[in-house]
Amino acid sequence: MGINDLIEIKDVEIKNMIYEIRGKQVMLVSDVAQIYNSETKVVN
Image 1 (cartoon, rainbow, N blue to C red):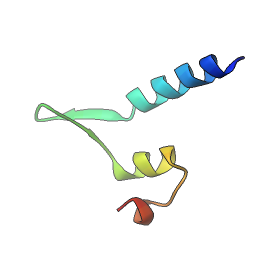
Image 2: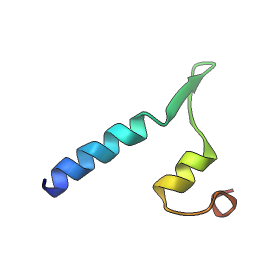
Image 3: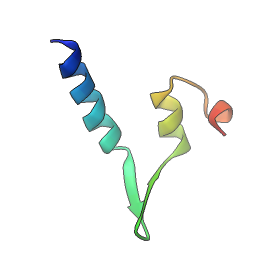
Image 4: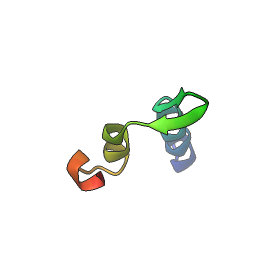
């Protein structure tokens, strides 16, 4: 498994965190915090 494989896996995981609400693409702050390996309160 090379770096490109890891990037593709990460892309798929992130795409699964994007929701569409009233025609807008949104992400939960908890998911953004997870991506950046941080706490939710830091992202807020």
